[in-house]
Length: 176
Image (tube, one colour):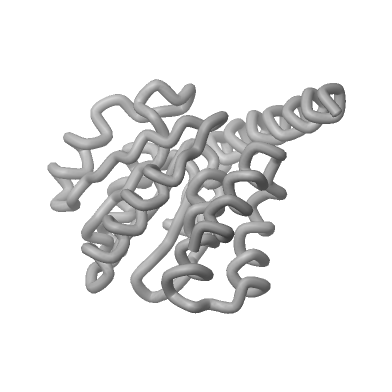
């Protein structure tokens, strides 16, 4: 079991590293070119960590709120992201979800922010869009009533949750 977990982390992080490199080397044309960008609805989109230029694209696309689920110590975190987003006219909120320890308190805070900003265009990101896609799956399924299979399939376009995240997802569903 432990060997399988170690192997899955090597595969996951190796793939993640390659996605970051590929994204940063590819010429940018628009918002859809942001690392692991996913359009969810007219008022919601998600991605991995955007660059300064990509934050400008997000602002130009009309998003009014940036919600970042990665800790400021994440390896690809953007220093001064809050100041940059604010200078672009967007609200900035950070819920630093620890990768190896997502909590129900994190998810509850996330849901509160999503509800508070529901009428505005909101762009949610983390380092790779893995934390975010899991939280968005749960939010859409548990709070918005989107069918589980539909909400889950959107998450699977980004990744297949590892054991830690699968346990978190199961706990969140059981507690709602």
